[in-house]
Length: 327
Image 1 (cartoon, rainbow, N blue to C red):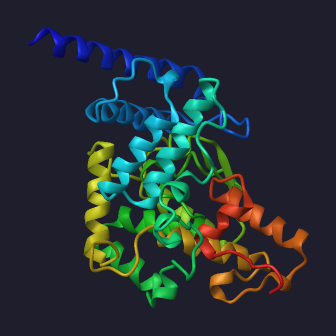
Image 2: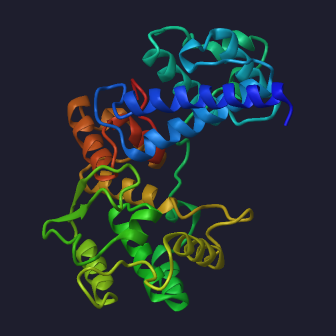
């Protein structure tokens, strides 16, 4: 290996090491002061490592991540746009780089609307990522008979059918369905979601508020021989479980390029159902902000948000739409 190339590789490794140490030192705390999950820290590290490599490929021989400047950030953004990165991905990358500059003692280095400043002539809708649901994402709203579809899942695989029941009854994510231990998550009045099964790495207790939820949980328990058994297929690794789950979803016609909805739609189904169970009609189903006073509405939105593993009522907008003022 030529000497210059060897030295360059050494400097790049030094840059990545400075980034790793910075994330490890500061990445366990969210912007709001709460403790972040291991997965969140890992995602930040993955983004920053990719940025380090890309900067060097673009000719910016940065030696320490704490020396990251606006010039570097703008170069990365231009590269992401030119290579067709989705607006959501670009916004996520910018957000993580913003944390890096804050930890490096340079808060405010990256302007809030940097994308719009760099591309003033590009239509705003092409740069904006809007997470708010404009229409229902639930299976029911897509014209799918959820009960019939779960019976079809049973015919393919009983464990798969039981997972979908937990999805619609408790709003569980795919990972949570696969990692659930039906006996151990049964807390009587609550379904107990713990760190090893939660995507966010945070514990949460989901109230068992309807007989249907109890029926679904008891059904899942009957498929497990021991109290410590996972609902996922016991003779497979987690990744193999994921592949089988996705394969079966495809056979149901729920996922794939030709499908009009996805498995995650069961979480939207749950969000809509729980909101209505508490007396709030979601916006995607025609509900207006005027149906309840603001305080009462926010109480219900907070309940739905917590049940689904989030901590802000605004997050519910991604599942069942956003309440507009004066409606």
